[in-house]
Length: 388
Image (cartoon, rainbow, N blue to C red; front, side, top):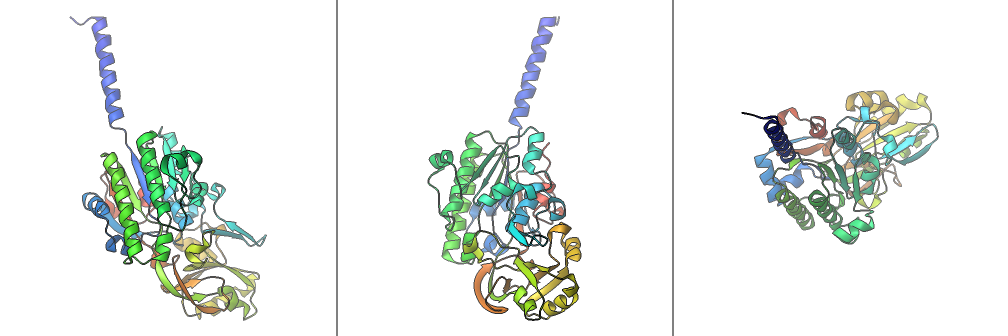
């Protein structure tokens, strides 16, 4: 005979078992953006953990978002959306009305909810760990824990180690060690981890310092995966990297023909040592809109300019936020960058990004069954990620 007491005890036991089962099944998600990690770095580097994860999970080479720069693509991944929705179209925002510009590093520029805000609504605890502090200030809205290796607080210096030089591989090692500590000790369900690309700006994939850097990152990532056998990993990059030896100053080219304009490389930010503010795409802002046809004609005739689009066409083609692009968007050849130079056309020596030629990036999903062939862009990793 089942008494009321036995029924209540049985029900309580069943409820406890159900709760225990749900707790055991609670997901742990790690989203990793390796800055500047183009296909040649994937293929040429000694990264046994990444290669194993790629074999056992789902892997392909996909695309980033144009302009292929850090702020645009970190924001696309963090919001799971294109710039036409989230609003970040460059590293450096110029207002043609005020004729003033600023680094696009504030969350005020981000018009869509972040993955941290989405996760919070689903009852998840989140963290952002980044080597570049600008990724924290731009993309960190809603994250319960926010840590940057560039500007670490004393708590994490005490736990992880001293602050490292931004222009060294050690700053990325610090970030991965911090990520490992937080995932093990701070009850985080979802983490976004983003590195910096100083090493890619400085060394080609086959050079010894690059090989050592990525082998070490691979070991640190392997340590994290070993800590959490059920961890879901979503890994990609914001852009690739190429050597550039030709430079174009679009404003000087136009000025020589009496057209007044401001030209700003989309890569421009505070990390000048990385790229000298020279990149493979730029926005041109004309003082007089009537000069547009002649400006297009002059720039089309410039060696190294491979594509030129009026602002509205650029916004439509690359899914950009229309009011935050220039009158023109220029894209360069693989060996060419735009920047502020002493001559209209100059020889340069820099490794940089921003064009279509740095658009290919890896897409890796491990620990979750997905149809990887349906993923085209890096942002698809989060756009298709259900947090329920």
